[in-house]
Every structure is written in C-alpha cells, then in structure tokens.
Length: 312
Image (cartoon, rainbow, N blue to C red; front, side, top):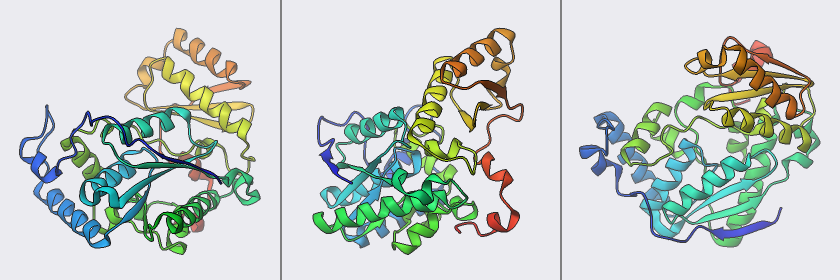
C-alpha cells in the first residue's frame, strides 16, 4: 500500500476557488443563481470545515468529493489534503481527470495505492463488496493521516446518499469518517449547483463509480475483468456516447446508455459499431438495454431486506 506522494501543487489555477456564496450573486456564464437555502447550507459546510481545523478528504474526482475537497481547500488552505486511491477499479480516464482538477486549483493531492483486489471478501463480489473497498481505503488513509498529522478524514457522501443502498457507509462509520456534505444537508442537485456557480468544469460530469460496480454480483472481480469493462466503456465514449455503463455478465455485455442519448444508438450502423467495439474488448455477446442507463441497476437482483439496510 505504498503512497505515491503529494502532487499537484503546481501551476496557477485556471478556475476560481473564491467563496461560492459570492459567486452566487453573479454566477458565470448561463449558470443560474444559487438558491438561498443552498447558500445557507454552504455556509454551514464552511463553518463545519473551519471547526475541524484540518482534514483529509477521500477524493475520487467525482462531483461530490471534488466539491468537498475544493471547499475544504478554500477554507483550510494547507491544513487539508485530498487523497486519491489508485487501484485497478479506478479507470485511467477518471484518474487523469481527478489529477487535472486538483492541479487547476493548486490543491494538495496525495495518491495512494489501495489493495482491495487482494481481499477475498472483495473479490467474491457479493452485496458487501463496497464495504471492503471503503474499509481498505479508510485504513490506508488512517495510516497516512497518522504519519502526516491529519487525524480527521471526510468523504463525499451527500444527503441523498443516506437513502441509497451504499455498504461503504458502514465502513465510514466504523472508521469514524466524517460526511460534511450530508451534515450540511446538501443534496446531489445542490452540490452540482454550487459546483456550477464556482465555475468548476466538472459540475455536470456524469457519475463514475468504481469499475467493479459494473460486474454482476457473484462473478469474481479480477484485474482482467476490470480492464475489460474499462476498455469497453472507453470504446463507447469514442463513439460519442457520454453517460453509459457496460454491465459485465461474463461473455455477455449489457450496454446501458442514457435515454437522452439512446435514439442515436438505434440505427443498424450504430448497432454494428457498438457490437464491434465490445467484441474487440473481449465480449462474445452484446445486448443493448432498452431501459437505458440506471444508476445501481445491478442492485435490482438483491433481496429486499438487503436493500432495506441501506448502509449495511
């Protein structure tokens, strides 16, 4: 679990990191003004971060963790550190985008190697897989924090996430990891609105959970499987699709594309292009899910009592 060190303390910021409450008065471009209730939640978030004094943020480059990290950086300056976990479950595209955003804000970023893929409990890929992934991450961050003088860890859970099935929340509770966005009552939509007001280019970036979330439950998660999913999804982006998932069902790839983009996929020419791209990635059969993209669609097969436990 070697750390690759602090990076991205570099060139001048290409994007503003001014208080979002100020930006809300004159949001850039066509960004709508931030609602007063959202602005009040932002003030509560800032106050909480200042109260903490110093903080390490589990940073993935997604909108929630990026906004939390950027706000912590603005409030705490050098008393914060973003920590990005590099593992086979993180797509290289997401890794590059996460580093680029941190670089643009001159935000301290420490990349660590995590080894969840070495855990049999993670590999077996049951409903608790996300717990073992987050348990590994937070354990690595605790060790790093002890060495660097950061006793507190936070992650990007928002208020909406508390109502979803997210086993990683249990790992956060066991490691006493904080969730400042959720504490402030900020929802997914509100976080995106604040990121847009701050002129962060990732404000509308599609959600990008780890590659293992594409693998059907019960199928062993291996480096090769994750690389196959990554190749397949990247090939679809090269065809011009933006919000998508390639669900791994062994020899079968089930393609989910956002319903707003789905009509473009429904031609014989695009059928052929998609099939060729995914066969090139190693799948024998390809099917297009006519229901379109749904976040967490793999969870549909889980028993109701498992889903009811939410953060179980």
